[in-house]
Length: 186
Picture 1: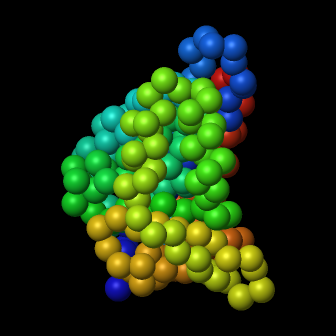
Picture 2 (picture 1 turned 180 degrees about the vertical axis):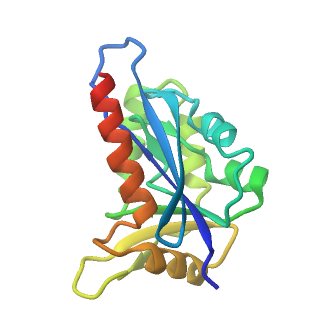
């Protein structure tokens, strides 16, 4: 069964910075089928550790059936913990990627740049299997992970919300809005 309402989560643009505190926007788009019901934002720190708490605060009073994250790393390596989102909300979390994550490359970057690399890495390791899915015939496959539901459920959500490209509409729209607003503000 396909969820009726879905939240897509993406981040905005940000400039590379030299150790100063940079920020960008985390954008959520709530959709019911193809209708946008709500758009909401929060500022998150580039390479910070506040994305999970900011997301939970944004969706506290929002009714939805599933959430689709545009990855788990936002604003550089500000990692959203999908298991924590699921534990708090008890609703499925789909982690979408347009290319297969490279665990070795990610681990090396974390070790090189973060004292708390092991904490961030443990979140990534807790996600489980990465599934490949041809969401639209003739397009390259997408990749996803799912917390709180079956891979078949995630496939039905992704297929239902993918219209224009390989990117599910809640993610595509959240990215367009977040990038547009964050570029305007920078």
